[in-house]
Amino acid sequence: MSIFFCSFIPPPPPPPSQLTISGPALPAPLTLTLADLRTKFPRSEVVATLQCSGNRRNELSATGRPIKGLEWDAGAISTATWAGARLVDVLASAGIPDDAAAARAGIVHVHFEGADSDGGGDASGGGGAPGYAASIPAHAATDPRADVLLAYEMNGAPLPPDHGRPVRALVPGVTAARSVKWLNAVVLSDVECPSHWQQRDYKTFSPTVDWGTVDWASAPAIQETNVTSSICEPPAGSILAGPLDEVEVRGFAFSGGGRGIQRVDVSADGGATWVAAADLHTPPPPPSQSRGKTWAWTQWTAVVPLPAGTTGPLTIVARAVDEACNVQPESAAGVWNLRGETSGWMAREGGVRGMPRAPPSLSPSLRLAHTP
Image (cartoon, rainbow, N blue to C red; front, side, top):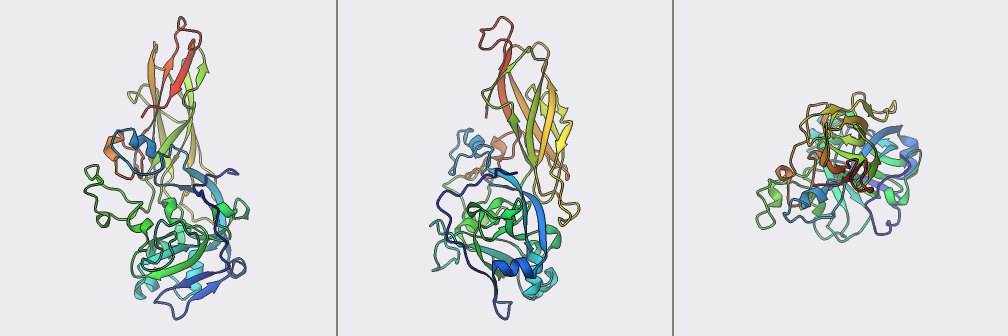
């Protein structure tokens, strides 16, 4: 977990010197420094995976229908041990000890506002400086079992600049778009965050909706992550020495909402027959993490028999099943959406198994190449 994917490209902004908790329900804003977060609130650890909603977007693009967005493959995802103050403890110090208190105060959403300015949206929804902002429902922010952190450490060290130093929001099990970096404000509100990133991005629509008919207000903002998986080994384009009767396949699977991975099925014949991965490894949760919640990915390994008499192309397929028995859909076309979000269809890789009399570059071997 020492290497962590980062999608932020421009230089990080100057680190905010303080964090403000505000909202009409509070008699006065609460201002906290990093030292306050470290000394006034218990330190809590969470092992959590963050995934961009556009992960595997390139596979939806390969259907031939136009999509707008960065052409992520399966790598816009990473896992780390995060540490910081629990948001529920900070809100309690501001006079909002639980969801019942939030409901009485008319708090429906909790906004996170970052210090970065990228021109992509307006955090205030009005005349404020453009910057990144997002929100989560108040019931999630006030739920101690949601493990939401105001994180100031990553893997036992202060947050690196690219990951939000000095403080970021960490919202486990939810699309990474809500874990705002370089956090300088938490706003308790009766309305959802009005930023571009909450209102006109990170939403999904029916495959029948295209760029000419989209109505952004008609769809809710993505929160919990869908179940997904990816095949990491053998890598695309590799040639494996043979002769081969079976192939070892490795990858990862992940689901949101604290739902762990129950099973990963793997096939070497395009899904006609399946083998359950025998080796599933999920990072163990720290003692301070809520019991019964799995916020991290599962790495899996399966030894899959090759179809008897295989002499030509074959397709390796993986599908994950989470603790709620949610399973990945079979086709990319069925989950296509105009922004290419939540691409969670079954992971697929194709290849050619060489025959003894095939050219030397293929014999006897298994050549793999990504197939949409």
